[in-house]
Image 1 (spheres, rainbow, N blue to C red):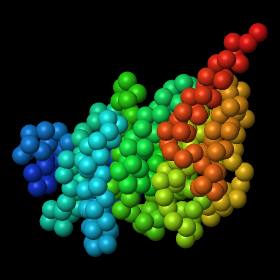
Image 2: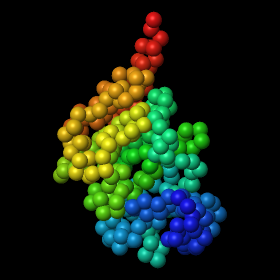
Image 3: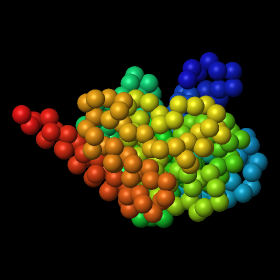
Image 4: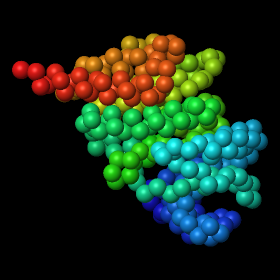
Amino acid sequence: MSDTVPTSRVGTQFGPYRLRRLLGRGGMGEVYEAHDTVQDRTVALKLMSQQFNSDSTFRRRMQREAHTAGRLQEPHIVPIHDFGEIDGQLFIDMRFIEGTDLGSVLKHGALPAPRAVAIVSQVADELDAAHRGGVVHRDIKPENILMTGNDFAYLVDFGIAAAATDQHLTKTGTAVGSWSYMAPERFGDDEVTYRSDIYALACVLYECLTGTTLYQTQNLSTLMGAHLMQPIPRPSRHRPDIPTAFDEVIARGMAKDPALRYPTAGELARAARQALSAGDQNARRP
């Protein structure tokens, strides 16, 4: 996003941080490239939207979740340096990663299946580490997967997404983007567990393979109904070069019943790699 946006805080000082460049803006806040003048390092600084700053429940949840996420040690998880509040403004200080988000990459079309599987496998490693640590991400989507130039994948927004309720997402206008990857149980009163992250990861894999989101609608009611009721689409019907074995991977990863999904994100990634190998073997047969 351009630094010329009128509300941009580029060039200003926020506590010890000098805000250099606006990296992105969404319903939950803004992310800046900033210079930490105390530690003398470049960081990614997320400043939460005003409605969150005034929400005491969100503040407590964010601090708790960010503290838990900050203890996670996994190469594909962006480390959290610090978090807190300065002059009433909530912030999270993270390692700065030079790259682009997967959502921007997918605007150019579907990915080759090997690349899609490689990216999803990295995210699966992150999720398994988080789930072992008792952290559920809750907002897995291409925009929260950061890619470096050599396709090293990072999952961002741990702590932030977990602190926000689904009502928060609706109010901030991020609902359409996030709800495209939401498991059916997210739309009711059922408990949200790590298996909701696995569902969302299967949605991301589908989009990487086909270049399209699962359900093509901007209407939240229609989108909700699709996740709850519609048959799970088959990626092989979108591209003839996608091995049909991926249909089963997506079907199980997106099972309406959480208990029928893969038990871990790593199991989903392993099944995707096997589907890729099965496709290679079929292609080599005379």
